[in-house]
Image (tube, rainbow, N blue to C red; front, side):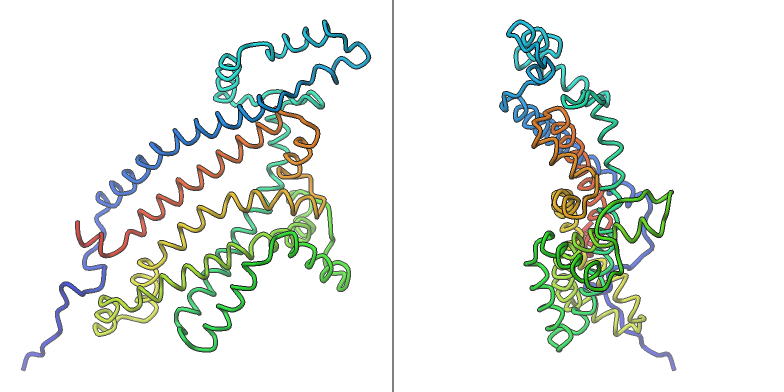
Length: 343
């Protein structure tokens, strides 16, 4: 006798057929194109604000460069050589033209190329932020999944309480606490300095792990919170029930169906955390005495070195916008089942 098998239509699991690569590529291309159309005006506006902030400061290197010869004539000559006597619009057009070619100007403090100064320091900050982001994603995803799978149980409540506490702690408090525990009390990790990875990988890791942990806890907490909420909602949907009835493996149900449809808010959070990580790097690099991108921008601001400050802001803008483009492409790849099935 033939056996009957249940057939799921409207409430079926959200992967009824193999993915059409052409459709998927078209969706990614559309998301990339629409994002770029937003990113370009944002970049122009942000760089305009950056230039106007430098112009509004009224700072000029003429007095310091003149030294003992700081006569009005000498100051006027230096301003003319630097183009600071030009109308504001002409200065902006010249600055943007150099910017688009990768020329960020020359430091008023030491005469070095701003592009080279930032390139030297950016590797340090990139190391810290990359490790912090990796830790935040791994810890946040793990906590979010565990909390969602144990909804309402003591494990879920404990994770929620830990997340609430961690999210209230600023990076500088965590940095000081880590130094006290691991450097002062336990003598396990050095409290300051930096060594390139190629020179000594073990020492490199020991020096960046504490600032990376200090920066990673806030993204981990927000990621875990958003992922838990998204997964709890996704696991309650009819297509999950349909997948269970069909006898699919629990891991497949979690990863392919629940996680893909519930991870959207968590991925969106990552796009908002990059500015926070770059901003937090200013504080952590100061505390750990690491000559990175953040410390360069802070020192340059205190010295009134406008070209370096503008250069660091432009690089930060580019990094933030680039990462947001990647996040939007990722969100397009994680398009919810309801939207996929409607097409």
